[in-house]
Length: 390
Ligand SMILES: Cc1ncc(COP(=O)(O)O)c(C=O)c1O
Picture 1 (cartoon, rainbow, N blue to C red):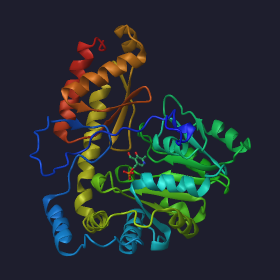
Picture 2 (cartoon, protein in one colour):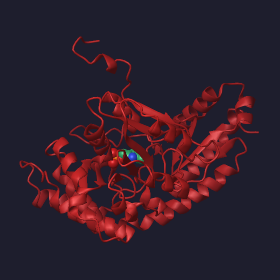
Picture 3 (cartoon, rainbow, N blue to C red):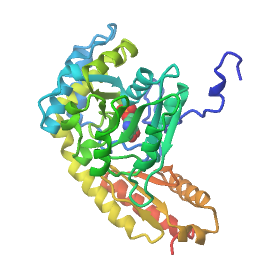
Picture 4 (cartoon, rainbow, N blue to C red):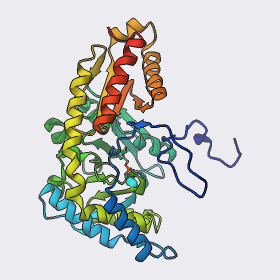
């Protein structure tokens, strides 16, 4: 290892996302094999052509490539505040409550820097959950406390969490991350979990990640004014179909907004991405129309997967489904649980279906009806072929 690199980074493995969409340059494009990308919980639907045209028009006629973007995100903050109020039927969200990030990934890092860096704090997560909380904390040298979840429902082990919160760890827990609904497991917070969050000490910042809230239709936004230690994270990468533009936002107490502003890079969001998010909000009813199709497809996929006796499948409030091989199916395969799961994952990949192998199971993003049908056909055939089906 190069002598100037921090020694604790030697053990870390870089997060390797899938290659993403093809970037067209001056070289002729190479035909790409059709791949159903059901591994990153994006929307399966691209922006409608008329919105792409508008965005292209803006780029050609209004945006100045030679100028820095609006580093204060003023127009976008106003539009986000308006959308947030409409989405939860509230009136209190103002631009002063909004922070805009280069994806919510950037905001996760900013929150860690604002609360825990320099040995001042640690974080608490309930696994399995979104992996970037732990990964980003580790890259910053922030320690991660992890509690488990109920094996049947994936509800958070609140008792274990309280033990950590009350046990005065050094450094103290400053950040608690929950996802509503959770990834990779799809479960929304229960009334009991929400009640627990209401009583988390005010010295702990509670991050409620609502990346999938447009699919679940439930948000804790209405309660936020009573909890200055809550922050809601959201993204344009899922329901708004803008994953390539990297726009996320946080809704919080204005003092936290001001602190996050001190930390971020001055021009963290390119002009085109700001325009794309503004355009998406302007056309929100049109873009969000497909949510009904996606959730109906999710329910169809769930029911079909439930018919596979070798899979245990969990209900989901998001645009993803979590499943594991049953112990009986693993036993029949004469492999370890991990080997059997990886064999299934690899075989699907070879056939052109990308899903995520995670937490000893599979997270399948809900795709278009055609993608879902192909996935079901390939999955059931592969279970048979690998002797994983009874
Ligand atoms: C729970 C959760 N939070 C945040 C993100 C990151 O979103 P963004 O694309 O805005 O960085 C994801 C992405 O998969 C996610 O699942």
